[in-house]
Length: 434
Ligand SMILES: NC(=O)c1ccc[n+]([C@@H]2O[C@H](COP(=O)([O-])OP(=O)(O)OC[C@H]3O[C@@H](n4cnc5c(N)ncnc54)[C@H](O)[C@@H]3O)[C@@H](O)[C@H]2O)c1
Image (tube, rainbow, N blue to C red; front, side):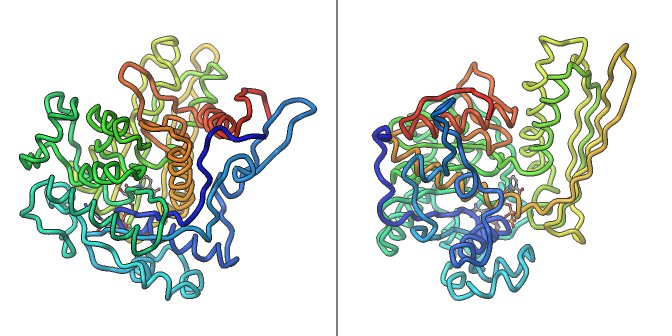
């Protein structure tokens, strides 16, 4: 089958992580271990899933790399920025997600991944004192230009043919979309040059720099960052793919499965209380109300569009939905997420469902970084610029055009993902049941 005008995945692919904390170090160390044959890429669609192509008697189940040209794990090179100086080995040890025996065999490779100095503004991450930062007196535009230079230098030093930039740094404080600054590219660029720190978050400097260098940019936190018209316009102008926001890993993944089940069965919901305990640095950052606000907006959005309360007011018109994250150091990265769901059935009789997900946050997130980086690169090679809604499968708060509703249902998202891959591979999109 002839692939649809996709540039082959030749040469090395650089994956530059913004933030070299628990998630990034677990992702990088895990990928290095897996390519040594010392672990399995569990949770990764690009490495493990088989997707059906063709129908009926022609149906075949193939790995993603058999449908479209994909880099092998051996072709990947890693780099990062952080506002703290720890290299990837020190960061993985500090995070205490992976056991020593899953880190030490790649210690040498990890030690060589020393972060480049990050773009820092303490107003955006109040809980971290950045000690490894670019000059904070520089304007947002000047900082963005330094990030561009970092990308170019990394690409050249590592001999990469392509680079993807993925944000796995702390969640910034909530900044609402400001129509005057965020809705046009001209106004946005003027604000960067005028060093408008209130409206231009550090994350925006990385995103703009990545696109300027033709690198896809993925936003893994709930930051506003690329979710504004100026960034959509810039992505189109530069021909770069962008996707975001907020990795859909634990509690929200379960939510987007369970709420779809309730709506399919026409069972009512009148309350959904979600709480978490989390003790890693992410939990510490999210303990600050302005940072939690960003996460809250992202976590609260998912069930409304799945339940379609306007179409079913008797079932979903009056839901009390609350989400909490509590910083609790003893659990470190082992997040425990509880959900109490008050549902009702025939004649309005009440019932309850309790979910207790004892997860490992970074273990769930790591394969998403791998897939999003590889699929972001695929989008670039396939000439798909701008917002990549087909990657919504991986995201809690998927970006969508103004006036359109995002798809949150995990299985609908998976169908969209598979169809995009099928089409890029030269196969027909379809919605047959597998
Ligand atoms: N693990 C999950 O399941 C999950 C799911 C969704 C989103 N996320 C998000 O992923 C991000 C990373 O999570 P984590 O557990 O690795 O957190 P972490 O605190 O361990 O790592 C974040 C790193 O980002 C660095 N950082 C902060 N601001 C920066 C900046 N401006 N530039 C460069 N580096 C910066 C910090 O110094 C830190 O090392 C968080 O925003 C989190 O909310 C995680």
